Length: 205
Length: 162
View 1 (tube, chains in turn blue, cyan):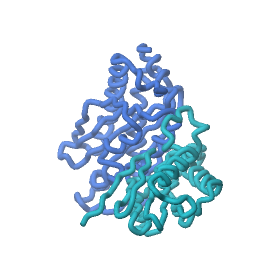
View 2 (spheres, each protein chain N blue to C red):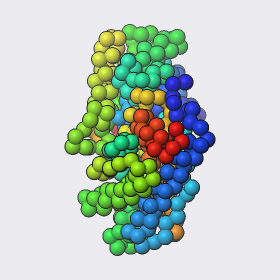
View 3 (tube, each protein chain N blue to C red):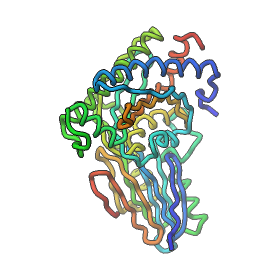
View 4 (cartoon, chains in turn cyan, blue):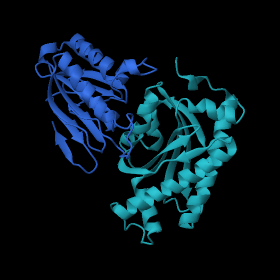
């Protein structure tokens, strides 16, 4: 097995979980401030799974989702994906634009721009916390957005990992609004070389 | 009677005979390569992620790459009773899901996948009779082994049969 991520120790996985916790906590706070509603988040999952299984985390490869994708630049490059099931994204737009729940049926240019900004803020606050924790400089790229099948959207990051191995290390957190109307998944997918950098930075090499 | 629906995952392939169908969900930059022998009604569906196994650090799974996956599926079909010079190919996928101003090579992987598949098919003398690649949207592909119809479903670009 050439995949180095399969050899991570329990301590290293714990450290990655803590990273997910700190980052996602920060983004959940940011999101809850934007929509003035309480946001709960799940305990971050650190999973090492075959590449083809990753889309199952968000309901299968043909689930319809909105994805906001950002590249992470800096000392530990990687990708950030914020995935929302389509209906959650529509509801989030209703809230942001002050419309009645159920009014949004498609995404216009303004809606897309708003969702990208949300992705930007979430990724920014996540990476900020992560930078602070690891003392590594990490900067997000401008966001890109797509409304499509989960498998197709995730393929963007999976293909990259596919060059290095057959497994993905996924640090994932689920967000949930108090009325259950919004459910989102936040993924941090470090580039293969970055994992070592992050682990060294937090002292569990 | 319901015919069997065989699911093909990412970096995976399946071969089968009529009346089964082979399906792969949610292709983005990946390509779904459908092979079909219309006489024997034997077909195969391969879901590749990358063009070239020699450029990857890990190439343990041949179905992940166009250059290693295509010959593998071809051999399996021949063992099942298909005849190579009757086999025709249809391909779909190869999208670029996100547009970035400074698109790196990895963002353009859909395009590179499509190019690689076409070259390999040509080298193997397999006729490419239908091609639905490119764009910026996902596709679900289904090969019906009874007829050889390759059905492409999208979210808002409609549905078509190749």
